[in-house]
Length: 325
Image 1 (spheres, one colour):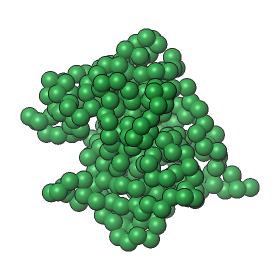
Image 2 (cartoon, rainbow, N blue to C red):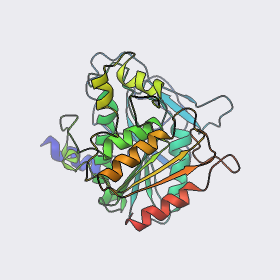
Image 3 (cartoon, rainbow, N blue to C red):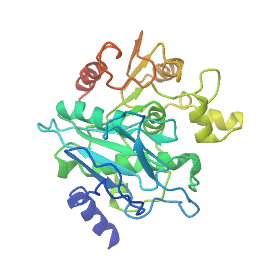
């Protein structure tokens, strides 16, 4: 009974047998060591779906020159993973973090490890997702990252009992292009993007709350982030295709409460992306809170003052607590 075996593996020992970050799944040699306290494991029981014609090789590198060794980014992801940080004092809830990177890479150090530490301090079990890139030749094309996000959310929920949090108290937070993926995952009526592979896929694609941080939302119009659109949809997508992937359209009335934050001086992903999403959420009667900061530029993450805007993690935590997370 393979489904039962895989469920047992997932719920009983998947995290305990987490992959060492010093070994790439494709045998590509040593990568950067995981920061202390983190564990990493693959989200698919075998190879990720639809990779028959994928030839890219996964890489982990410093996010920028001068970054510390735990400020890294993954490109050409072939083995999607979750990286878990357990809280010292659990509050019974979890967060799925989806870092950004323009759909060309996943900046796990800045918008994974650092954010996970902050929210683990508040009691959340934190899972950071490294997802596949849409232009790397996967059969699913643009939906390859959505497959990973849906699978990751289901795995997080399935691990609730083992990791001592309520599966109904899982939040999703995405940053930049990861904000697009988080909104895609949580703001539309769930649609199966892959064939089930084990019993964890019986879990609903459902989050208790969602947060879109300086998100890419629009794939059409004057405020689009052209780099993300090109990676997701190609150089010359049709108007119909751009509309389909512009997430201010087709928002579900069942979207969980949403927290948005954006800097008004963001020159990379204009704040009109968050404003368009806020308007769409309000039109559907979805509970939402939106913070627009004077400064911060794009990708402010946990930048220290005075570069950072107001302490958005505290604003988010207050929002989360009000809505039961």
